[in-house]
Amino acid sequence: MDVVVIGGGPAGLSAAIRAQELGLKVVVVEEGRLGGILPQCIHTGFGLLTYGEDLTGPELAHRLINSYQGEVLRGHAAGLEYSYHRKRVRVITEGGTVTLEAPTVIYAAGARERHAHEIGIVGDRVAGIYTAGEAQALMDLYGVLPGREVVIVGSGDVGLIMARRLSLEGAKVKAVVEMLPYPGGLARNLMILRDFNIPLLLNHRVVEVRGRGRVERVKVVSGSKEEWIKCDTLLVSAGLVPRVKLLRRAGAIIDERTSGPLVNDRLETSLPGIFAAGNSLVINDLVDYAMEQGRIAAEGAEEFIREGGIPSQDWVKVIPGDNVRSVVPQLISPGREVIAYVRPSKPLNDATLTLPNGRVRLGVIKPSEMLRVRVKAEEGGVAHVEIQG
Amino acid sequence: MSPTSKFRVNCIVCPMSCYVEVELDGEIRVTGYRCPRGKEWAVQEALSPKRVVVTVLKVKGGDLPVVSVKTDPVPRDKVREVIRELSKVELVPPLRVGQVVAEVDGVKVYVTREVRGGQQTF
Image 1 (cartoon, helix red, strand yellow):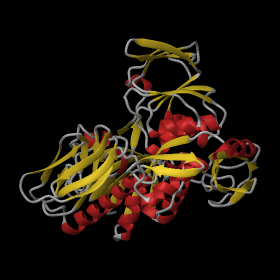
Image 2 (cartoon, chains in turn green, brown):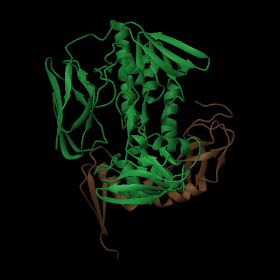
Image 3 (spheres, chains in turn purple, orange):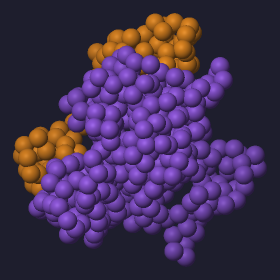
Image 4 (cartoon, chains in turn red, blue):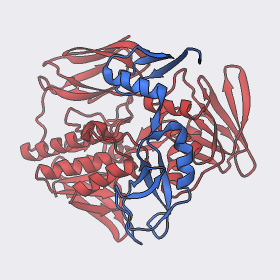
């Protein structure tokens, strides 16, 4: 075995397909469905950058699953042991624990959703509180409508997409409540609010849930104003957090800005031979970027095996400057043009991005739309990345 | 004659997200766009917006109780009607990705997830 891919979602499958193309022997570890979260994302907008086609999530999953002919181990990756030449992945399967050994690992375990208790919502512990992704699985995998009168917390993409699904299937979305002064989703998803006449409450927070057995009302506050909205369901769309438990336990350095591992331009973590891709590396808005990260990680794994390691060098440290929340990778090779993902920290009109290799005019930017750029830095020193408004 | 109506929209053709205004008063005037695709999209959006409808249809004897489908683009004000018609449909596996499983007013409906009969698909 050359590479163990942890996670069979879009990033993991893309990594596995690319690794096979490069002649590596691959096993993918997946505990649920191959395709990850894609089968429940029944809307369009997937694969535009990769295939130039507008696919739905299940269609993209189908395409990826068909392109990967290698081995899949069904089970839960419960342990990751690091040594330079040999990694061990302990997998709990139906038939017992299996330990896989390989010189490289690609970690693509995805992300988890933030829940109500993490965003300061208190009150009764009742039925009817779901994350947006849980509601999506209920509706679009199992055909169950999670409620009739719904308040959605957070104006991120999944929340907006669920606002449309719920409205179409007969529920009433009473409001989308956003803490920030600007909406969180992609422009194409914000059109949903207009299409279905759904009120967007900016600068508002849901702080309390009341009900007996089931949600009956939620308290919404803005400054000193407060109001109760009657509803039977609260959907929480408050962002994703990279799943990095195994990486952290194995000793990988975690970047506070992304909550994912610190990586170099091969997407190799601080543990040589362990690579990361997809939402466990950095939260992506576009599946195309997660898939690209999978391919970059696979190329890194091939290089690691061929060269006996990624050549050590004077890494150039990437420093996020003004209006930049995070940059991945955090370390880049001098003199090599690499792909970087830049998350702006606030919306700006007519923005310009400054990189070590020049300036890029961006136009309108928003934190909800991660920028993908090519960066090249010279030897010595650091690479500043900043955005001027 | 209807009064001048102004339609404002954030373009979604590319990440530039231009703020485009379409004025409809007999003739069509468009401002704010930066490319021909954006202009075309904004005019279409102002005159007769279309949407691809995605939903799930009931499946009897599949791996899961429903299967995801998508339609050809339909006029926005017909979306609810399409959904209502599709709620009456029940399918039986096997179902292939791309298979046309219904037609509503000439609008084709395609399966987007593979369902084999009586067994786990993924």
